[in-house]
Image (tube, rainbow, N blue to C red; front, side, top):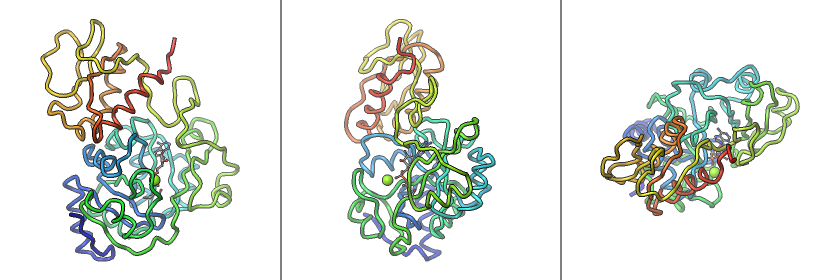
Length: 325
Ligand code: TXA
Ligand code: MG
């Protein structure tokens, strides 16, 4: 059952904040498009976003904040990022910047990357929820995977009705296209400020602050430096998929109840074979086993529900290694 409540009502926001606090999903109007919000600090809540959208792969998500201060607790904006934030926030500009240690954002939000996309939206409903919850909210557009972004509550209900707890209805979105995404991550490393996605904030208005932007693609898999991918975390070590048990010298990424494996590092994605829990644990698990420097044997994961996105990510990690001999 998906309830709909008015976005401009304070009791409705209180109710929505309770849903978010217990790990539920709420569709929220913003000035760009409707977002599907979850508490960015709860990995399983974030995993449910992918489940509800039926997204067959994990793309990094935008985290929404209600102040410049909250943004700066999460990322290092640098001079250019701060100037852009001051010029455009609250508004339709998302900034990708290096994430701070201890940001507290679930690793599924960034798909394991070291950078984080942040936006302070011009939306009293979304900022009202962030203030009530006291946490940032991860929110992609509130549509099923492959469908166009929703700009009314009716669009959201058509796509996600029955799959999420609550829709806040704030009428039609004022801008109607997604935010512009700019990366200042390269800028901080002495490189260029890059336009990752055109959107609600005009390039010319952004360039008035930054000077000429370089082109890049948010979803590009091409490395921008050796050992570093632009939008996907790739482990350095070799991965062997569908392994029932690790071989000598391998570490083991397990799933489900397993006989104890002796003499080998094991991280279990979900002992209770829960794909939502497994998705929430995936990137942190890959990173910790990658850090050991040994090849990783990966247990079979069912290809249903979130298993499809998990298996997509594992297959690409097994193929995309940056240390190909
Ligand atoms: O207007 C908007 O931006 C809406 C509202 C709800 O705020 N949100 C939205 O989110 O459009 P979504 O998930 O549909 O698009 C997020 C985009 C993806 O293309 C993703 O690849 C990119 O942001 N992105 C997120 N984090 C990134 C990162 N660390 N590096 C590069 N790209 C990133
Ligand atoms: Mg989208």
